[in-house]
Every structure is written in C-alpha cells, then in structure tokens.
Length: 388
Length: 181
Image (spheres, rainbow over the protein chains, first blue to last red):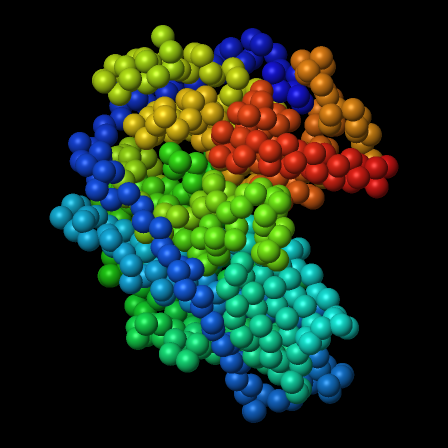
C-alpha cells in the first residue's frame, strides 16, 4: 500500500479493470507484429553516440553589425548584459549547443537497413527531424526559459555576470564579461563541456536582434536571431548556417506564439516542417505537417518510453497513402548520460560542479538518450488503423 | 503460475495469458497512477497505454536483471512521469494545511487515505522544488507500494542513494510547507 492514497471506490476501480482488460485483449488480438521485428531488434539495438568521447571546445563569436550600432530604445549608451537579455542568451546557448551536437550525430546514422522496406520520406530524414523535434518542443511545451534562468552579477570572479538555466535535466552556465558596447566574451559550461563565448546584442523596445558565429576553428555555427513580442503574440526567427565536419547546411526556424498556442516551422535546405501541439481526446499530441523530398505528410507524435524505460517518441505517420507507426529513441545530446563524473554515488560526485544531484548519474535518468540513432526495433505495425 | 512462467506462456504464443498479468497487477498500478492523476478516466487511459507497452516489450524483459514487478513499475513510472511533467498544474491554494506527519508516515498509517487537497498540494510542491530525479523517487515513494529496495531496483539507483534522496526531499518539502504556512 502506498503512503499517500487518494480515496477510490473499489467498484469504480473494478469496472475500469474490466474495461482495460477487454481493451488490451482486443488490441492484442488485432495486433499484427511484423515477423522481421525481432530480427531487427537483434540486429539494430540503439547505439550510444559517444558525444563526449572527446571534449568539445567551441568558440562562439558574435559579430556585431556596425550598421546597427544605434540602440534607440535603450537610454543607457553603455548597454550591459542584463537580466532582461539573459533569457535570450540562455535560449541561444541551448539552440547552438543542440545544433553542434546534432550535426555531429547526423553522420552516424544507420537507417539504411530500412531501404528495402516501404518507408516514408519522414523516416528517411528521421535522424534530422527527431533531433529538431527534441530541441524545439521546449517551445511547444511553453517551457519558458525565463522560469529556469537565473542572472547574477558577480563581484569576486574574473567574470562580471553569471547566467544559469536548466532545460531537460541539464544545467547550462554562462560566465560573461562585457567587452565594449553590446559585446561580450566568456564561457559556457554544460555538464563537462566548455564553450568559449563572445557575442553582441541589439535591443529595441520589444525587438531583439542577435548575430553570432560558433566555431572551434574548423567547425562553426552561425545564427542570426530576431525576436519580437508583445502581450498577445511572440515571434522568434533563427536563420542558421552550420559547417560541421565539412558538411554545410542551412536551416530556418521560426517560433510563433498566438493566443497561447505555439507553432514551430523548420526549413532545412528544401524540406519544410510545421509543428503544433494539440489536445486530442484529453491527451496532448504534437502534430506535424511536412514536405520532405517532395512528399507531403502528417504525423502525430507522442512521448513514450521504450522497454528500458528510456524516453522515446512515437510517430504515427501518414504520407501519401502510406501509414507507419514507429518509435524513435530520444536523441542523445552532449552531457546527457555520458559524463563519467556523473556516474557516481552521492559521496563521490562532488568533483563535478554541474552534478549537484544526489542520485547517481547513469541509469536510467541520465541515459534516457542513449538511443542516439533512431531505434526502429520497436516498429509496432507498418499499417496501423488510425485516423489522422 | 509465477510472473516469469506467465511471460513465458505469452511469448510462446499464448497471448491470453497476458490477462493473468493484468488481473494480478491492475489494481496496484491503478492506485499508483490514480494517486498521481486524481482522475479515473485519465488513469484508465494511462493504464491502457502502460499495459500495451508492457505487452509489446515483454520480449525485452530479462528476469536476470530485475523482477517483473519492478520492470513493470519502471515502464509505468516513466509513462506516468511524462504525464505528470506535461500536465498543467492547476492553481492550488498555497495555504492548504499539510499534515507534516504524512510525509514521514510509518507502516501503521500507510493504509490511510488523505484529503485530496493535501495530496495535490504535496504533488505540487514536489514538482515545484525537486529536481526530476528526486521527483521520480518521491512519486514512487509516496504513491506506489514499492519499498526502498524495490524503488532502487526500479530506478537502478543504489538503495543508499534512495534513502538519502528521500530524506533530503522530505526536508525540502517540509521547509516549503512551513514557509508557506
């Protein structure tokens, strides 16, 4: 018996039991598990991406646009990093960190085994999309960065400001100095990974404009970011160019909020995705509409867990007459579960300043993301009966 | 039949044997999920999803690594935690008086039910002040019938760590309750 119990009528519970058992047995009867599922399961267990196999040092260079040096909306000519800008800096750190990791993992895909089966264009691009979704659903969930961001002016540090925020169980810390008007330098730490940071910000009333370039000498992420907000509506636009491992890529991401509803649009080269979050039959679902490789489709995405208890996403795809129901592991991301310092008991983990949790790191909370590549071993039914 | 024997039956093709698993564990899981949601319909929906997940994942269950019950709770815990993490928290009166003795209840009063508003307030505080890992531990500790050892097996975290997490979390919850009062 649990320690804290709500009162529940036994007859109600028994009636629910009968309905649930009847439903499940009916589903089991109707379910047709593909014969090759178990073969796939044996052959293609999710691999863990060794994102942290080597430390990544990334210099974020934010290039200030000289033509935009005026700051008419700010009465203080010596504009400084402030609590008001810390949310946007947190947001940019989050996006840029994910993008760098995303580009690294894209080359490590093993989806080709599905080439001789009937797949959809979305599945062919699932490596990219699943990571976009994982990165951007923070907006659909309305998890405001401001709620988890703390801004501190430091007096006994080589840095002037500290910005700390949490997203998805990870703690990001930015330590910054102001260099000159609107320009700053510093470092960002993310669970053992350190990034060098420089940047500039322009703000004008409800509008902000950022340009920044992230580079470690060979790889780079360049982002132009604009945001505009008033009481009812909010709009953010990211125009991104990445060059990681010699692969160049262009992305456009826009995030709009209207009447408490968020919409995210992603453009990746010629592909387009539109994401919304909707309440259907009492369950929140993410609705995707896309045009990929010249094909149009829709998908319903729900959060679930795989058999190991690791978070995963279930995609119900409908694309030009082809229906698919697949489960994809939550993508790996720098710092999640691969930090050896985060695999110790309470008494031993103090050496990692970013790990202030009392629980040991590795299982299962810290490695929900070891399904680096898409786990198609949980294909449920290639042609399920559902209506989109 | 033992759980492992039932699972062997199911995996051998006798799908109807899965009904034995549901019959055995439905009410236990129902109470755990209902304690979290406070809504019968939502609980039923979540339970159906959990049982389907269990059925579809049965071939992954390794009896050498965990008991079926704790493996089942792992799946149920993550599934319900996703719900708990996503749901919009209703405005809960911060001045609801929480009986602090509930937080450290011993075995003798475990069977008691508590007032809805008190439980809602405690869940609200857990979500507000604890980190996700500690939230999961405390949700299992308060809302399931699992022992510390079983929570340890469910989460694959040493039981010593679970004890410490429960202790520190209860202290934090008490502090939050007292500061609101």
